[in-house]
Length: 395
Image 1 (cartoon, rainbow, N blue to C red):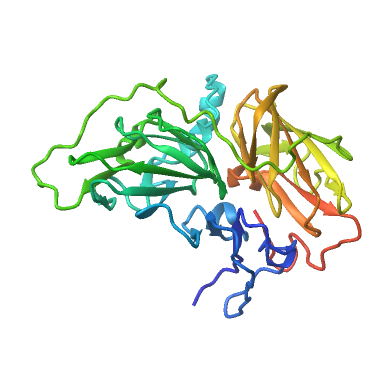
Image 2: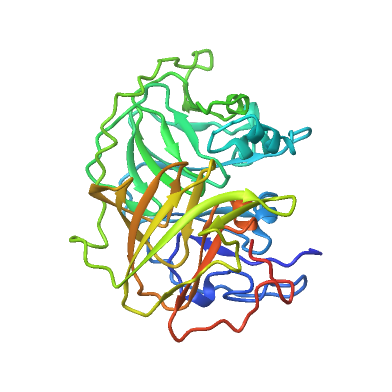
């Protein structure tokens, strides 16, 4: 029998607040031997995932998650695969080295993740144990990538052209095939499609800048192919792409005047022997909540003033990215998570149209556990549950 309480959060799905699965905010954690039933209508096709939101920095890190795919009624592709990417701490992983790296001036946005985790996996397997993708020549294949880890990954398709057709559950239109490495941020989901016109084996492989990347490799094998064929080794030119021109259905066709604005300064500092990850120099639960009323148009400016990447995830809502580093975007991007890298800033906007109490936090869950979390509070709503009481530990 399990010995730890759990919850389930269906990441990226816009659900009623009581189905959101955040321990101490939308429900009490489900104790060993007890049960809780999540009920909702799965009517929004796309790629999502689910994971525990009770002691999530530990439980997700230990693999308490899975993919959640809502397929369209009419498929425009022949075959699909879902590929969950993650990082693990196996054996002597160098924990404790982060502070030394910081003192030596390392500035990578993922210096903590690179020092903590030394093994990369696809669907829980690494290296030669990763199951291959089997395809037929001429097929249109959809690959659904889910980044369940805490760092961004770059995947190369060995020169095979692909199109981005979905991000965070939202369809992407009018993209032309490109061949550049695909960047997938922490907790991001990206769907790509390829038309198979190669009878040789080839590879989808990580080009992350560390030694663990060499074991994040997926073979693509045309079925009935001669097993003696060698994998394709076409070199990729990083600048050959049309995938940058992406079109999504916007939340706002014209950017409205917001009813309320918030600034979120994302920081990191040493606390009582541990790293603290802050929003406006406070750690959760002392962070200032977003206070809104139903129907408000909300604008938030996220500013990364630290040396770490911060993939910021808003529960219960999609937001529209309207600017990066002060520059307005020509094409809207509608997401539930944005990875804010060191020195970057983003302006996002959303409509407060799903009443309740919602988490807004960094999805490097080690950062969330270190304090980088706040609450979106709708006027007139309160939680009958208590964070850090009755065993509830959301992060």
